[in-house]
Length: 199
Image (cartoon, rainbow, N blue to C red; front, side):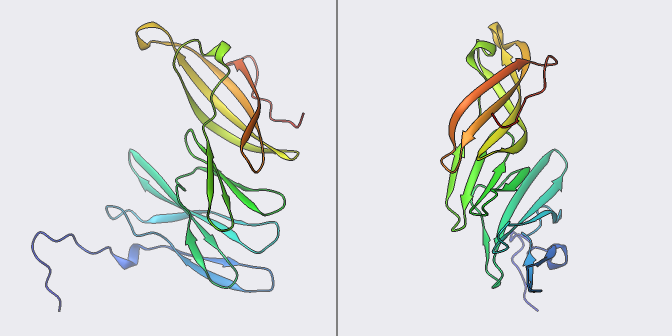
């Protein structure tokens, strides 16, 4: 039996490490181990997305810790390779229709990964006319709009003394795969839903 020093952290409980099986075309199933638990909270598999080409899958694991939510995405290949994607604390995931890129969105940042794990980022912001002072945006959805990506946000903007001055909704269209902003449309909250239809 191995004795640990009194001040050494306890090793993670392997019984709390969640595993998910990913089924690829042709019947190949790859077992994907999740991240180690945090404070005895396991990282639960919350989403598995097979790419349109069937040559990769994304598995999102999230820790359900009170007052602290965090996620991690693993890129899986049919041959059994599993790669942890950098900066993958995201709540929304989708593949581009050609299966070459995986798109994720956290609270306020959009990320686009290629199949080698390289990542690009963008931070959506509402139109200046609706945000005369400082503003914050929270991503509420991703929509594939033709060959572009549309990101929906709910925005809060602030006036003097950092008091909240209003809310709005925004639809930002990005060209893929560069994540180059094409247009930004913002409406007062309650007047219109952010329209993410293709132009």
